[in-house]
Image 1: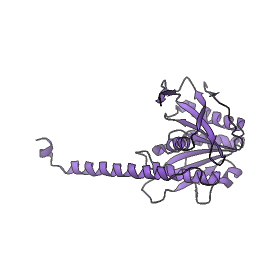
Image 2: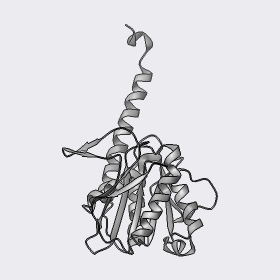
Image 3: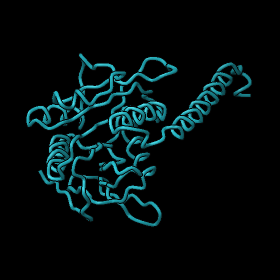
Image 4: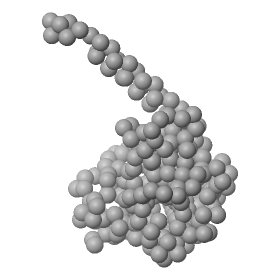
Length: 243
């Protein structure tokens, strides 16, 4: 399959973490990836390219960006991290080659762990979002914090699913973190909960989740107002609407 990674800058990622940030339920993985990039001021170190990617250029800050990018750097205390991120859904035919490319690249960089955040459709809003975890190896399972629930039965699709199965096949250490999320809007609360778990895995408060929780409150208030207005419209007499 026509899929290549072009390194723009070489950095040391030995024993670091590689994070997958492709769109998922509630855009959880995308929010987590972009938040980590912004919070840690990671720089673009590579692009992933394919003839099958959308024929677009994402423009930010007067700069054209590729549909799939890789950012890298360190936290203030020296933890190494790289993030694959995209705003576009991966074409079905590229999901397996892309997941394989991520694992190959992580192995080349001698990274210790690949983490893939995902949204899991939740039925109702909770004060504290539940996060479920599953890993490809015994070593990776030991890295999952105790408060993360076991994902014992179900189906994980897309890039995350292939990262897990391919990781198990080749013995690569992969963790999938699935946060209960709302499927109809960007769920910053679920993303903030994933960030909290990431901090536990990485050892310490490296990425502050508070701004994400604040953003979640704004989104939820806006949605509540929209629903309230919609209910008011429903109650308006038809004669009044068409008068």
